[in-house]
Image (cartoon, rainbow, N blue to C red):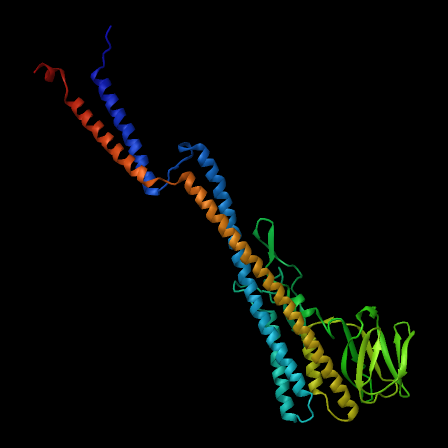
Length: 399
């Protein structure tokens, strides 16, 4: 029995062929429009699965990049604030040296005081600096309100101590700013390790000229006092145990556990120099102490000595504060370097991921345009074939 194909069957076959050709052509056109070989997962399930994983990895790297950009902005703002802070500390040190000069008049001292008060106001403003996003840069995570407030002439820190860790690469985090308490409130005094200070009740004319280690290995971190009486001195520890003694001579160093203290002038009986670990205090207190020194009367001689000792302490404290700012800037610089290194690595990873993604799913343009031409020709041939089939009938065969 011979097979027969009905007219309806021929029509259905022709239509099916045209639809298949149209689907192929549409897919190729869509591939060319998107320049993607893999449009849906079924086009290449393995490639699509790998591409999805790579896209997630790329999105993660881009998230790291966003985090790094925000951290970099905040660190650059901190660096700018620290530069300004350092400049103001240097200027206040210059003022302390200028003020410790007997040739100053009342008017010139008032001018120095006005400048010092302006620097102090500027320090508060720096502490309350914005991060450019409506948050306070040095408030820790409590950055919705100003971290530094002034009440009754005293400045206090009301932010928190949190250091925000920002993830900028796999297993790499960076602190995006330091809390204001670390920058402004906990700053070592003296030379950073030891502070030698003249007692406020001293009545003699002895002034501090220099301090420093001659043998740091002897220093035990204890609290000591140098007391003067009858032209002699004695060094006592916190338990009133005699550590050293001798005849006092102006300009001659007194050594306390490897730390020498040099005085000039004549101490009165009962005068005292305290020597011990350098305490930490706020920069605002350091500036307040300098302002108080400038305001002191420079007569009589004992008051003048007290003023010079106050200037000595202020200058030393400002030097140590400047070192503190340098250390902070070094820390910020190291974090910025970490961001730069992570950016280079991240960009290299993103380039590699994009290249692999391109190999997996991007279109071979030359091959696709050639295929489009073939599929267009095949569709046209199917259309013409269908048109010929449509024109066929039994009567046309009989003619």
